[in-house]
Length: 242
Image (cartoon, rainbow, N blue to C red; front, side, top):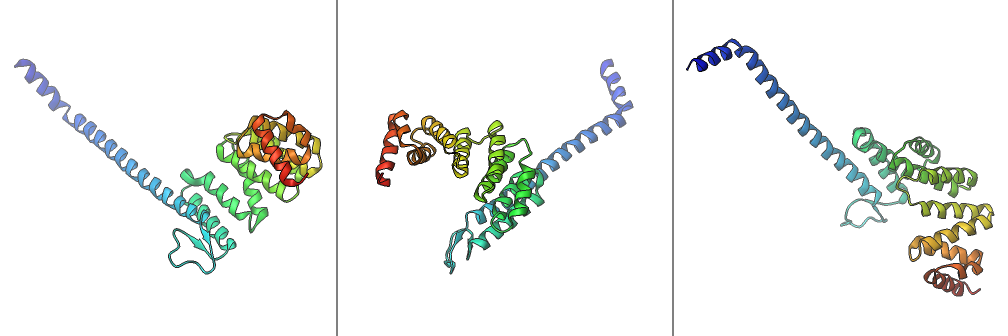
């Protein structure tokens, strides 16, 4: 009983401090709940905006647009690219912590179709980032240089990507370098890389593509390929009429 009285007195003396402590704990718990709810709502909203952008990314193009067209639809390719660009940019701008890098990257890939210089500037900036999106941006930039006949610039970007590929398949980078060499007239270098891709990726679409180019450039190298790739190359050679 004495112990109970003593402890009761201790509690009464410190009731104010204890009450403040309990209020503090309750307030902290409420803050955590509010933050969680707010974050969840923002995550859902960010996901919704990105989903809309992907809808335009995969939009069908038809003129006239079918009345019951599923998803997003555009009358022209130009409209599709503009709509997708705007949607990805908005997703990146409104929710930068969720959609920032990937939204800007995907927006730039559509912007390439109607404003190449600005899109290239965005890709150049993103390519400096040590992230998956950075690697994808460098690949898109290199391909842009390649398709606009700036082969030295394309080759430089592919070489950078080869040293830090991120989640880009190294053989894809090799194939693109080989294609760039071929466009530059560096046939010997192209053949060697095509052979590497064909021999290391048998049966894949990438390996088949490399075998096809190898067949066109140096049919004799087919004998050094694995049997499956050799057959693919021989079929391509027969269909070409050589």
